[in-house]
Image (cartoon, rainbow, N blue to C red; front, side, top):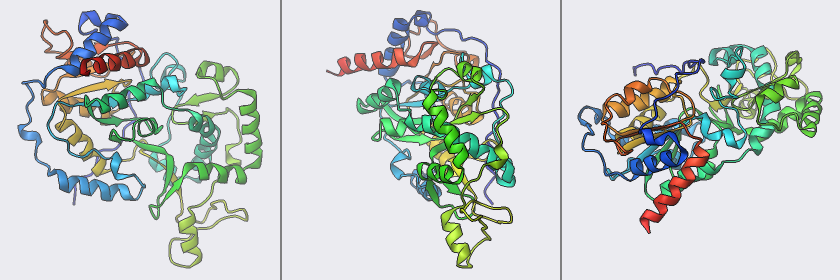
Length: 411
């Protein structure tokens, strides 16, 4: 029996203390840019220790991950391959990198946990067990999907891709479920640590179903909700990037394409059953899947429930994904964190792993970061960036400029 995988825990919701900027010259945008260039262009540190971390066989574990990913239709080119031990940076990104694409973050000035103290994400076991909880989840997701689907990667995602093309960055891990990294830089490997919203996966048969098709199904099954959504879109009520403005219009927007309309009749919402399970059930081969006259999932069913292909709170990250993330750390020369407070344990533990191996660490994040004091406890006073960087600037202002300088350095 393999050991049980740790569950994705609900992260800390309070903001962390403000950071100590490292080096002190990085208090301005130009200083942060210079420090990050120094960090990314430095030779591999002589202090990296790897002895006890190399106990996995790369080929076996990556094949295991390919097998584990097959059910959610993840293409194998999104799985980090073991790269050679050249001088490469691993980038880890969080919700902060997608804010300028119009998505809410968690702990920023307009973040969900900052403005909406009552926000509680759905738990995996609640989603699996409760028809009413799924109705509420899918109604809110139905309202939020259009704008999430319209949103596009921004200059920071493009900069990450360009750093990959320049050979500076070897791999990208993201906590985000918005698919912006694979869209912005398909040639640079992206490991989506917490899955993605672009598809659904059936809890019974494991088959994948595109979220865009599912949205059409939801519109057909819920005409009154569909009309309401069209009115909201036409009025621009869902357009604003500022959750405060949405709340004045009676709504709450949360990360991951979720819109809460207080007092909405969530109990009336309907959602479809897995078409693969439904076809098998009618042929008498699988779990009982009951639907109403319009094809909506009905009580009395014992299967056919579709869930988003994201790791929900209380759900475990697939063993292959966890292993691939660890291997990305184990084969990197340094680690750069962008737009994450590392409040989620699954991300924090990767930076902790990098620190334990002696990798130089840089963090570019506007707010405080979980446990950052320990990551920067032993930075030499002579450091100009190559040993460590902690900057509180907006990634959109900094990363494209870093790219320009790195391009000039390679000419």
